[in-house]
Amino acid sequence: MSRVELVHDAHATLGEGAFWDERDGVLFWCDIDGGLVHRFDPGAGPLPPIEIGERVGCLAPREAGDLVIATQSGLYDLDLATGTRTMFAEPEAHLPDNRFNDGATDRQGRWWAGTMSIAQPPTPSGTFYRIDADRKVTPMIDGIYTTNGLSFSPDGRTMYYSDSNAAVRTIWAADYDIDAGVPTNRRVFFDTRVVAGRPDGATVDADGCYWMAGVGGWHIVRLTPRGEIDMVIDMPVERPTKPEFGGSSLTDLYVTSIGTAAGPVGENQPHAGGLFVVTGLPAPGLASARFKG
Image (cartoon, rainbow, N blue to C red; front, top):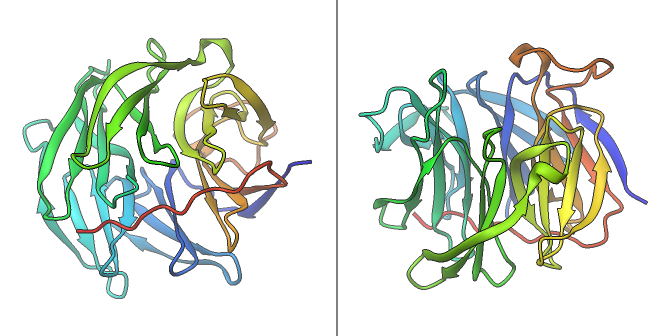
């Protein structure tokens, strides 16, 4: 039986970007609109957040130490000891109404980060970028409103991603060339119109099942590699955003969420914006690779 527990009542405005660093045993995650990078140690609890000073969408620990972060203005190295950030790329300087959103590393340690439109009404100006170990930034997939759901199969040969926009709300799968880092043969993996929540952040477990945060739907959903619903877990918040396996055995599924400050929500969710952990699941997760750059 699965169990959902609140582990940090952070009241984040827009919790996202969870990444379990297996080497240091710490979960990193973002409050996008709050401009914060949070750290959670399962043994010690929440550590002091790092103030970024602008929207921060996703992050990844580096193989050499510290983090890379993707913000509204560009891509940065972040020194965890001092909080100092140093820009190394500004791929969308020409798009002031965009910001970075979802991201993940592939099994080979490349970092992928996607952008989204913050204009009203939004436009399909979002792009997924691949950042290689030499820091070369390559636009790979464009024409997306809200980049989300980025994850990779256990063997790394299938790439998943989604568009959270209410008019799209689709998750795709693509064949992934693990040597070149190139997705091809895109197809619909799951159309979320059959469930309550739109697709948000995601992860893949050791069985190859895809875990989707159903934002707006009060749940997270486990999908088989065939794109069939296997399990639905009710959450105590309407807008869960990003699941990420962690813990010493990778059996704990951490889930970030959106807080009430981000807009009206349903009643009876005093811990919206909190960090939760789900236990008692059928399979452990997979360790996320550190960014090689």
